[in-house]
Length: 322
Image (cartoon, rainbow, N blue to C red; front, top):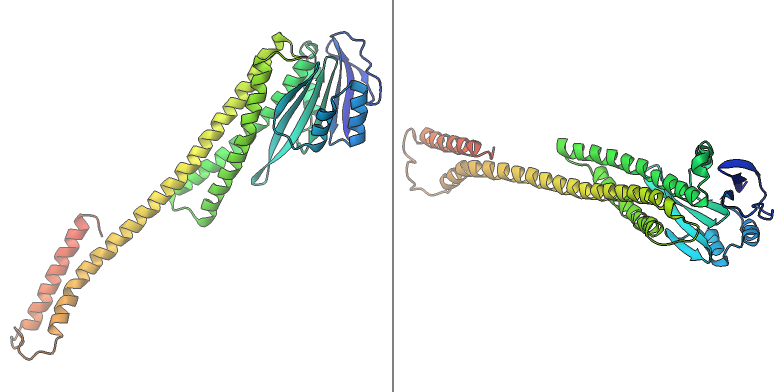
């Protein structure tokens, strides 16, 4: 069922359900409005609403396609607002879209791909008639605030995973799977930032520009939504920096480990070079060589080799190469 809820409200209280093909039941007073919520509606349903509420055809086309960046368009005395929803599906961020038609006596929300229904939001607003009595602009604020609040659990979940990866990078060397996950998270964050930027611009326009259907006393509520967007945007930027630093630290630790192994190999090579050099010299088949006829020459050579190797070992040990 695409029509999730459709009700007439007066002075902040729900009066009765309405049908989408019903001629606007509002008497024209500012205290009355219709709030219709749809989920992935058909073209026929949107065309019906277009006829009943005078929706602009370009806005209807955008709501049908559902492939828009966050924006706010003004069509005469009506607003058309597009917001992007987001939620985690496994290891990735899945996106949806919510389009909102706002008129003086109606607000129509059209959801596509959103995992969070507005049922809880509607119940929360109906429980506070004083706030709901502010009209359609307050409902628009509540929808945007509901969408932006859904961003925070995503950032917190990614932040927790990033902290775990950072701890593993400090305790041991990152595996190939960890490095792959770092780049995957970085891609998800970059895509998420592409949504946060336009969402911030959308809220900023509702705060700073004169818009039809938006009363001056409701603007501070949109400022609150803008503050939430900026907070999430700041946290996301910080996560991106942390991911970059984790990868860089892991690379530096790996280089340090490889440097330590190289020094150890060089130290042992230097130690082994002493007996190799001596054995190489005395391995040459010359008849007249020093000390060949000495009774204890063999033992003297072994002692010299051992002494030099021991001195080199102590020296390398002191400088931290072994």
